[in-house]
Image 1 (tube, rainbow over the protein chains, first blue to last red):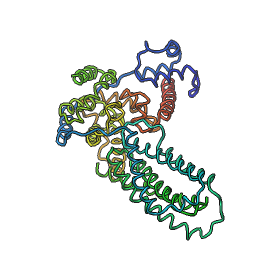
Image 2 (image 1 turned 30 degrees about the horizontal axis):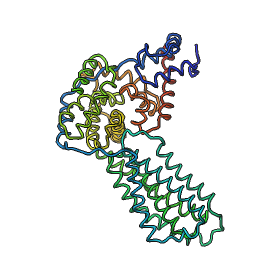
Image 3 (image 1 turned 180 degrees about the horizontal axis):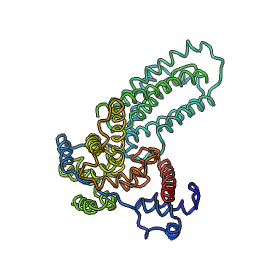
Image 4 (image 1 turned 135 degrees about the vertical axis):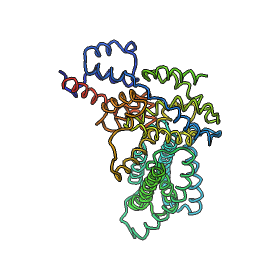
Length: 273
Length: 203
């Protein structure tokens, strides 16, 4: 008898057949798989089980009628939302709509402190972060969309990219008035993140967000990133410690706040069910 | 009337099993959904009649209470109705439907767990046994028993593959996952199911 957990290459071929779809007729199987199913009892049983149909539930005309009436009571024409890519552009446009006036109002003291290489490199890092989050948000508000990367993956890449970018691009200096000069940056960044978060939420609610906690975290991340981006252009302390702790802090606090708000929204939705 | 024909096929085969290829009517559904988005009441009727049996089965395979499954079905349709503008005709419909259904079930499960923690059960008799769909319930309960003990994310993948006939990519869409993650979960579940079949045979 074969060990329970040991799978042969032929067993894995059966797995691949099941991946193609449950209930595929044996005549459509490859010769190798057909032969294996005759020889390997456990694979034969698994395949047989996967191919068996499920009896139909008794239909409930009354229940269906109730559902139809409820829907028809508020039935009206709706326009389909655009593609996930177009929705991602909407989030990108909202980001620019908030960040450009904010940066113009606050001044570009940070740009003067950076050299051309630092400016270009950090802009690329931040822009890629925005694109990644915008795409992730677009997937989240469109049920059934195919995701190339998970929400957690997108936020982790953003945070890691920011840390790596700052560590490699900016000089380390002994902190001077670390708290006194850092606190205003954190406060300013969060003050910018808050209204932009509301704008991003307005864009998101045009779709159909399903996972509120994940959505909250991602909205927090993109709002925090907006705060970080404006600070990057405005702040004249372009040192690794300051950027990591105070500017990075804006990102982390915004993500945490977004997750908390998302959890609360999810809880409220369940209560209303 | 592609929708009607597809529905008849589902019902005809439904009298014995639902093994009828869901792909056949899946091809007809986007057209119905498009008409639903345009506000066509007939399309609503056809959609509800053709998709509800699959959704009901999906909910019933998680829970032995038919009443609970029917409540979830109603809630699911209300959510589908509120989200209908997010369906794009070029995309497959079943993953869109099941993405909404999955979240309806998860929210219902959490709500029920919260409620149960505050209540003392009056009776342990499942409602399913008193329903007209008894024969179906027995098979569904077999399926439920077979998958019991599997991690929830693996169980969900197997149920979607088996109940809805979706492909791995479609299940990935419905569960907001990547195809790689779904494949991994499915293969772990196949391995565990093989072990169960083998154990069952030797016991």
